[in-house]
Image (tube, rainbow, N blue to C red; front, side, top):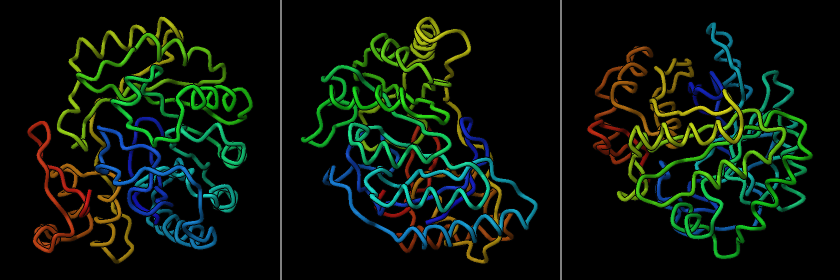
Amino acid sequence: MAFGPVRSRRLGVSLGVNNIPAKHCTYSCVYCQAGRTPKPEIERRRFFDPKTVFSQVQEKHGQLISSGGKVDYITFVPDGEPTLDNQIGSSIRLLKEIGPPVAVITNASLLWRGDVVGDLAEADLVSIKVDATDVGAWRRVNRPHGGLILERVLRGISEFASSYKGDLISETMLVGGHGQDVQGIASFLSGLGPLKKAYISTVTRPPAEASAGIPSDAELRSALRIFEENLGRGMAAVIAEHEGDLPYVGSGDLEGEVLGIAAVHPLREEALAIFVSSAGGEWGLVERLVSEGKLVVRLHGGIRYYLARGK
């Protein structure tokens, strides 16, 4: 449930919270690093007791601090859509008692619901996903649940932005060959007054579908220019690099640490080797997990990645 920490350009050193069981999501994005969503869903429900979430994150945070590390954010970034958890508001309130600010990475598809807006109001930072503002691209890229309506989703995002008091950032995943209207996305984001930064991401890890291509450098430069023309200079950034080396936090369960991170963040072979070595482990552990089917290996862009089983 608690994993990492992992490094990100957006949030620095982030202690992850996986509050959703595998692949409970409102979307089945073609680029998703966690694989296809077998059956998208939009009904919220209880998954884990907030007290259990709190105790596991508190323990992990304590291990990190005692080893001389730091945490910039405690971040809800599960293997699914975090707002499907109808207890996320209670979990956020509890986790804020630990100390670091709490962030939520959401695809924003349920922000038209008042209860979701109320829950996320508790967070210190919310990252919203806007990959498309036209129905065609939305269906091609995000493959939403049939009960979702794009107009309502976008209106919900706008209304949330107007009332949210924390730090609001956005992420747009550009997928090669899927006809996204970058100008339309940038124009929409420019209307979100409190937006602190708009990030443009690319498919750097193995996607759910082979058709999810990587945009060219020229396409990324063009997208960044369009975003800055609409949002202002310095208001947008491209994230196209891999994660940094991952510090090991000694929980005494290296296998659990590897599987916990790989369930949400597919790991480059180089980064995984450094992680295992820093824990005093041997590469044989990874080989065993692969032979047992707990880890799978995928090649993407000429790089070997390790993912938890079923991703």
